Image (cartoon, rainbow, N blue to C red; front, side, top):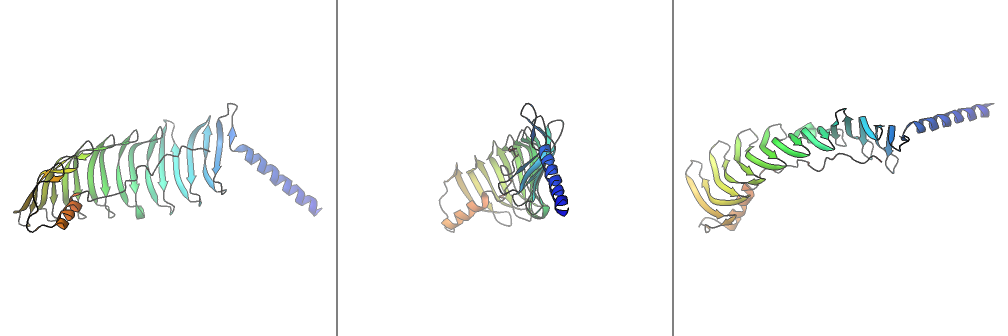
Length: 264
């Protein structure tokens, strides 16, 4: 009797499993995905779960790391927009924004450690547009610049950690172009010069703390024309180059956060 009961229980569980299995990963008469779908890594761990209507995703999709942690949440809206949240494996937010036609659209915010903002700005059709801000880990703005179709354009400003202006200049079609000024933390000018397509061009002027001119160096499209002065060494030139190149090198994560097109 006990064996019969056990057999009936196992049979019921097996039938329920078969019914549930038939309820997910279904194709309609046209061979399109329909209803609830789940995909798994080769290890057997859940890769994503979501719903389709005639092969088109709708509602909320959740993607997971191979180790099981939540990776991405996509909310498919009726107007074709997709709200997105991407996570690090430790559960902290990596980025949030929206997609349109599988391209970034509208405001996006990228986060670093402890949910601190790394940068924020707008996309149109997957390309950066308008004003973007880069942040220090304390939340203070480190840099402001504008984009047009992924290229830096117009004025830019960089700031010290305390919020005071550190550098200002101009971008033209993705290159530093024209006059740029570096400031000391007290607001006095430390260095002033011009760029031509990211290269030093024309006269670059160093200033003493009292505002008087320390030295002037002439460049032509990146090539130094002024001979080394008595108190200069090649090492000084390298230090200068290190200073006036991009002082803020942040990973904006463009290209590392992508819309997951695969639905296997």
